[in-house]
Length: 184
Image 1 (cartoon, helix red, strand yellow):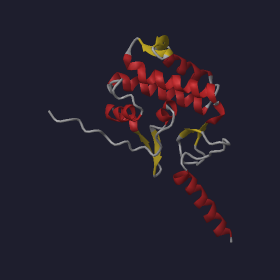
Image 2 (image 1 turned 90 degrees about the vertical axis):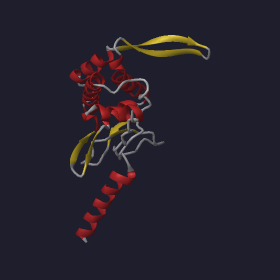
Image 3 (image 1 turned 90 degrees about the horizontal axis):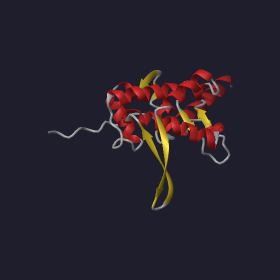
Image 4 (image 1 turned 135 degrees about the vertical axis):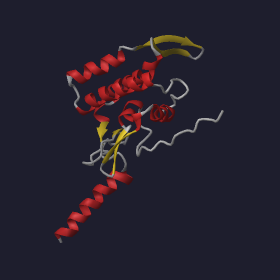
């Protein structure tokens, strides 16, 4: 039996907190919307990129739940306080809970899910709550007009504007430079 080939993660921005990384499974490439989560192969790439590949199965049910979580998170990130978005996030969160534990290292917490297919979706929604508790004003969308990526601003002064200075930041700088040179 041949070993399954691991698919490459094509996304331009990875490594953000889990909730924002889930939102970043949709991006723009040369003006065309791309979506990593069109099938279970893409789900497997996303799970592996976030260290969840051995914990959750990349199957149809998990994909369906992750897509619901992505839609819910997109609605609350893009329109904070929207009651419908809040209800959708709460609906995802209703499929899991945190169980308090005591380990050899001390107190701990363990997420539990009645249906493991909800696990990755629930963890993404729970992560969003953690970001809101830590610094809700640092949850941002890229300032470039054609970029749909999100990030958690960890800069010291909290003024990050771009998903990536090398990509969107440079495009904006080049655009401003071109506009100034045309005016001259």
